[in-house]
View 1 (cartoon, rainbow, N blue to C red):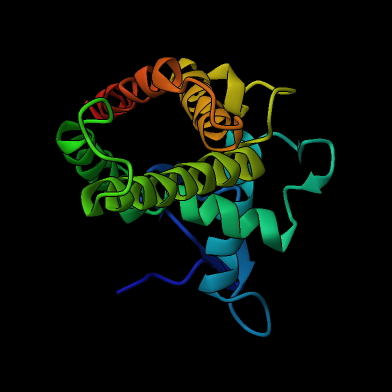
View 2: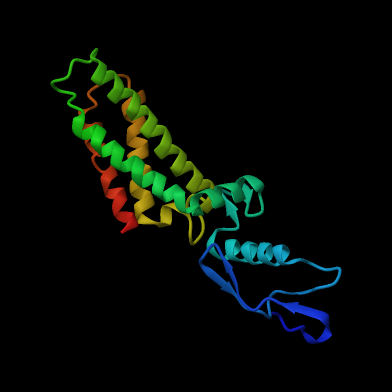
Amino acid sequence: DEEPDPGGRFSQHVVEVCGARMVEEQEFSVWREGGAEEDEVLEAAEKKRRKELYSERSMMLLPIESKFRVLAIKLIEWKWFDRFILITIFVNCVVMALDDPVNMDSSSIMATISFRLGIVFQVIFTTECLSKIIAMGFVLGSNTYLRDGWNCLDIFIVTTGFVEYVGGGGNTAVLRTFRLLRPLRALRAV
């Protein structure tokens, strides 16, 4: 299949990384005998892509090579991550449509289920938010979390959700209104 390179070098013509970036052959040629393997070429291309897309340090703490940060990057780039969040948003919309906090007895089974599902949704959306902040960085840098308007909406919704649950039992009707912004997050996928 492959033609041997002069000088015993193995040239990687084009490498597709995560279905997005292409790497040119001059950047990643390696020795075939006793040198790097194709996996190492792909790993080098992935590191280069990460450095182009993400800030050097996340929250001035985690370098781009940190295993924890690499794991967060892989998580937010995983195609099923966004799909899971969209499904969660849809289910959350159904639960909000069924919820009637004004006319519902707070001790009823439906109120209890709605409250517990609200906590589950809050945990899921908080995990998404924190994963993206760890992967992208928070605010310092060109491609950080708060540089995207949709992420600003996300963090606003997550923050108001926490205020609703730990707010001390005051009037949470206004804070519940902010939960209605969650379906707007689905527009990001369009």
